[in-house]
Amino acid sequence: MKNKLASKWNVAMIVTILSLAWPTMLEQLMQTAVQYIDTAMVGTLGTQATAAVGATSTVNWLISSSISAFGVGLLSFIARACGAGNRETAKRSATQAVLVVLVIGTFFTVATLSLARFVPVWMQVDKSIQRLASQYFFILYLPMLPRTASIIFATVLRAAGDTKTPMKVGIMVNIINIILNYLLIYPSRVVAIFGTEFTMYGAGWGVLGAAAASAIAFTIGGIQITYVLWKHPMVSPQGQSIKPDMDILKPCLLVAFPNMLQRFGTSLGFVAFASMINSLGEISTAAHTIANTVESAFYIPGFGMQTAAATLAGNAYGAYDSKRMKELARMFIPIEIFLMIISGGLLFLFAPQLMQVFSDSVEVIALGTTVLRMVAVSEPFYGFSIIIEGLMQGVGKTKQPFIYNIIGMWGVRIIGTFICTQLLSMGLISAWACMIAHNMLIFVLFLITYIRGSWNPLHEKKCIAGETTR
Image (cartoon, rainbow, N blue to C red; front, side, top):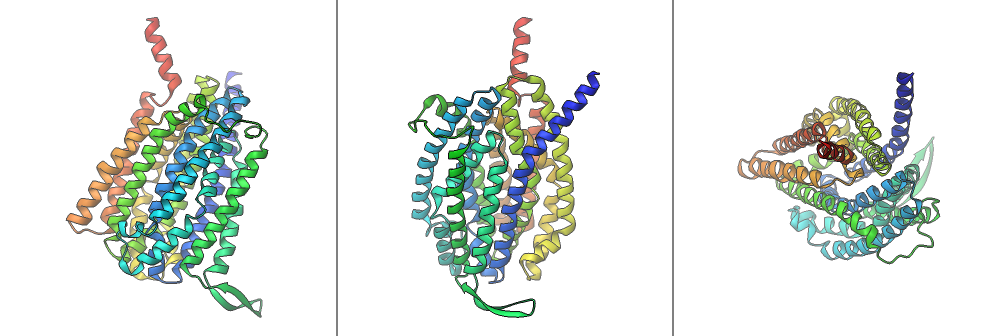
């Protein structure tokens, strides 16, 4: 009888996990599809255009990930409040999220627009495309406030167990982006459909058209998700005071600050990493940019499951359910590794074809294929790290992941890439080898954390209680 109940409970948990994970996966798949389409459309303009767009992409990660860190603090707090059945606290937390969006969004708007013309120079972008890269960056970050709202408010909704709404808004944004890309990148031209020819309007803005399309789409998405949050039955900020509430902000910031330092440190590492790769020349920059875009699609199962892991772990911690916490880890890990094995296998097999979608340069395709097949082998190991980190984010333990990621990024990837590319004059393959070594170190550190049980605060409290009793 107990086995049957346990089996039913496990099936119910798997259904819950997948129901939370699939909307996030689909949302990320759509975002990646748009990245693919953006890169392919810009790629038709030439290698210089691809390099101009890709040269500042790591700065985008730096900014987006720093904003997302505040979302992690709110996710942990709101998920625990929902797990404990405290709806009033969840609503108050959502109101503080509005305050965070206003402050952080305004700060990053001023910062990005002020520094737009300097970023390509710092990134060691070729002088011939620095001006174009700077203009692209400036236009892309004009709607920084709605972009911040999209990131933070989507996290609030996911923390409340609503992953479908961010997915729907994300799909809408991506469709708008694709349509505007088509209209703004290319000039007016004659198009034939089913034998009928007609003139299709086009602004002919090239790279700047891609930036404008994204900026408009981000603005619409930010407005839409703000409206959805305002009407949400569980976490609507309506009727709440927007003044700072330190009872909520302080614990959120204690979780968010290490995560922010982690994301800022690793993203800054990505900037340094990309800067060193940019110094290798146009072919390496284009191959790296395209390979990064291709690879991002194959991390979707990992990060989709991470969101579900963080939410459910926060719920279990809020309900003080030690058994459910352990079962979550036991169920998430094999599902995640299985998905990442499939993902890595597909990446390895179809790497040449995927590179060919974005470039017709034989050199770029060959170089990109090599590095993609290298990283494909490490996907399952990285997937394990993603899940354990997600569980830790859900329960508010962000200090250890911060330490692990900073050591991996700066102690292995950056130093290793500097030695290989700048001192030994080795190429892009050596840089990606350092990236894989970074991922493998992270896997080992998170594996030790999982075995010891230090990821689980309920396990630690139980051990302390046991020692006290003895």
